[in-house]
Length: 313
Image (cartoon, rainbow, N blue to C red):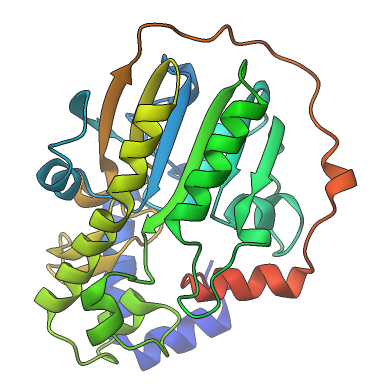
C-alpha cells in the first residue's frame, strides 16, 4: 500500500504519519481508490449556467468577506474534491462537452490527459481547450497573471458566442502576487504551504493569511470584468478551498494548503455566485476544434509549470 519512499518520508517527518492516520480514520483503508471525491459536492456540469468562472483554491468565507461589491446572489456550495486534480476527475471524467470551451491557467488537465505523469487520463473532450499557461507564463512570479486569463476569456466569448464557457483562474492559489506576498514571503520554495507545514519557512501565519487574502483581492476585479462583459448566466465558484491552519481530526494537527482527499469544510466549502443578464445565448454542441493542429509544450515545460505552483510529481 505504501512505497519505500513514502515510508522513508514518514520516518523523517512523523507529522506525515499523523496526516495519514487522520485520512484513514476519515475514509478507511483504500480511500485513494474509493473516496476520491465528495459525493455531496455540486455537479457543476448539470447546473444552470452559460459561463462558469473557477477561482483556484478560493475559500468561501474569504470570498464572502471580500466580494460583497460583486453583483449577483452568493450562496455556499460544496466542491467534489479538496484538490484540483481530483476536482477535474470528479467533474469531467469521460465527458463529451462539445458545447463547452475551457479556458484555463492551470496545467493540471493537460498534465493528466497527455501523459506528463503516469496517471490515468480523464478522457474529457471540449469543443475547444485554451491553455493560457502555455504561452502566458510569468517567469518572475511563476504563475499566470489574472489579466491575461481575462483577456483570453473575453476573446473566447467573442469567438464562441454559442458555447458554454469555463474560465479557470489560478488565483488565489499560490504563488502570492499581492503586496504582502511579494514583499514578505520567500520565493525560493516551490511548494509554499508544504514548506510552511514542515517548518521550513519562518513567516508568521498571519502574514501568510494576509498574502492569501490579497491573492483573492487581486483576482476579484477580473471577475467583475467578466460579470460585466459576459452574456447570459454566469456562476463564480472554486475548485476547492484552502487550509490556513485549521485543525484536523481526530489527531488535532494544524493543516495548510489543499491536501488531496482531506474532505474537511475549509477545503470543500466554496462560493457559488450567480449573476444573470437579460438575455441568454443559445448553446449549441459542435464538433471539437482540432487540438492536434495547435501542438503542445514539451513535457519538461509542463512539469516546470506544475512545480512552480507547488505540485510535486
